[in-house]
Image 1 (tube, one colour):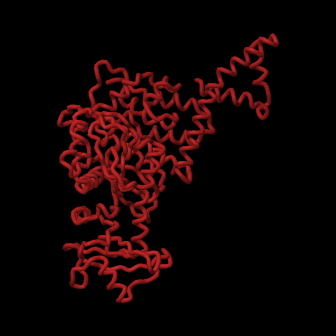
Image 2: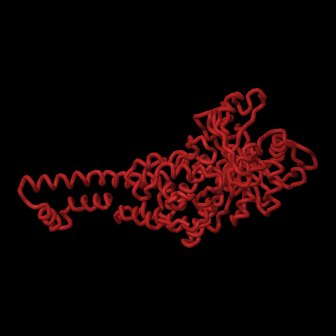
Image 3: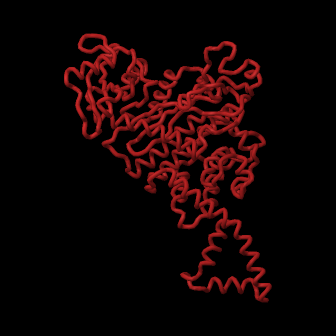
Length: 480
């Protein structure tokens, strides 16, 4: 097995910093604790390989600290010396279909959770919730493997790309990304499966993979319906030791199948449901949600909940043999009713609404991960690389989110910008270093003095007056 440079890379990068860069130091500290060099990636080393795979993964995870977004930027940056590998080394790693990115992601999540437990920063009164939702992952090339047209509910039209189904954990303080699957939408037009002409599909990149490979299993998820895959994601999280009390979801996912599954594993659902045609057994009669809230209004059971500034009503009903509680909410007397459903019939309206509000943390995750960590931005034609890039962005998000939590930044954006500013300053200092040396040499030549003498005089200045020395020290560290 190839020797790992994991700690050496982190050490060299650490040496670029001064004690003032607390944010970056804290983030680096977290990178150390996840111990990627001890993760078994379970892929045979290539005979010509000269770099340990954990080192390659570490460098890609460090991109946000370098203010880089992809392999090409790293290979042309001043940080390349940390691991002098060619672009192809990184591309081969991402394109490897044998790497189980799910295992890597859950291993990192386990390490991060250990950090949280050690710091004792969990709110024991707030429930731990799994959150499941999907998002559009737009692509630009029809020749990318497995891409197709998907319907975007956000912009109400079809776009090229994948639907990404994501599972996350709200641990009472912050959101952590756990798992995901990618999906295609076949559509109803047999002449244009997946919204593409058959000729366009034939021109797509295609790669043969061993049936037992991790990526082949991911391919098998592409056409599995999202309800079944959601159940698989939840089951896998539980198998990996993730504890939770509730599963939160929007109206698209709430159905009998997922309700029975969640109850069967000893947890509860809190989810939005539609004021549609679904019938519930209420007072011995099958009635829709609209009819039920009408009855509650006539019975005088609608009240103003001052804490939420909403009109509410609630009742326990039967959904195909499963007792559930419906919570009706609206902002004004003339407003439209929204309905929450929970399998925990002991919840009150206020608590149900507070728990469901946690679901919005996954929407925040989508926004921040796309903006800061390039979630779904990969334009690689290889499906393996698509899985790799999404997994890497999830790990990066989790690490930065934990750093935010430890350093008490109000938002992830504030922490990210602070980190970016710090590293940009270091980059500028590194460029200045060459200029400073050249300037000192020029001054020494003009005044006919020795370079060492000039440096000595600068060093002898009182510390509070020696701004030039401070700049040189920082530049020297950056150039080291």
